Image (tube, rainbow, N blue to C red; front, side, top):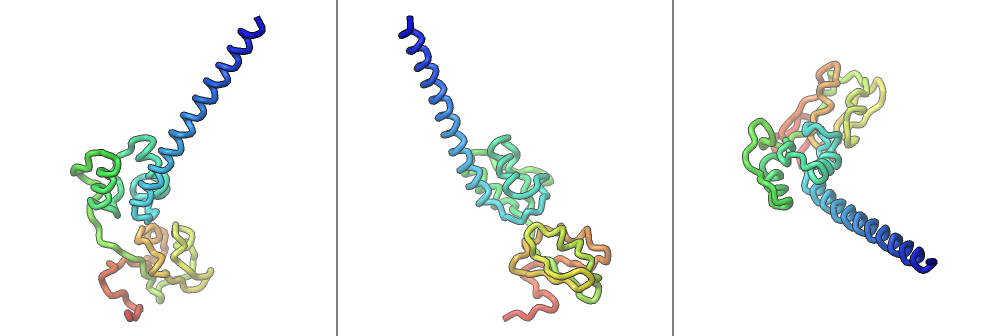
Length: 172
């Protein structure tokens, strides 16, 4: 009688271990896919897809089968790459993922009051400055997400295409 319980216990233990191992392997694989999807996204952290950033959007694409056509800054190029990578149709979707020119924010110094609202809104810390002092955008860090423009009370933040010369910046 004791041996039947021992065998049953061992079988239960092995079954539990197999289930746990299978789930861990699945999580590791899907985690790698999320990382690859996130690597493809433009990392603007603009939230225009409806998620709090590129990583949460990548997780939704993998785990919830969210549409791959929500990344507006990525446009058709990213939609096509994600479609190929995930084996999904990247066909035309009206109203989303249109190609956009790369932009950067520029602060008009004369109009800046140093309120720091833009600094708080910037998801990549591309705006520097201090309270009651003029702020500036570190162009190399700016992703062009435009989250700083609606919070500015003096409307001193302008978006410029990266191909255009930026006022006040000396090109070398």
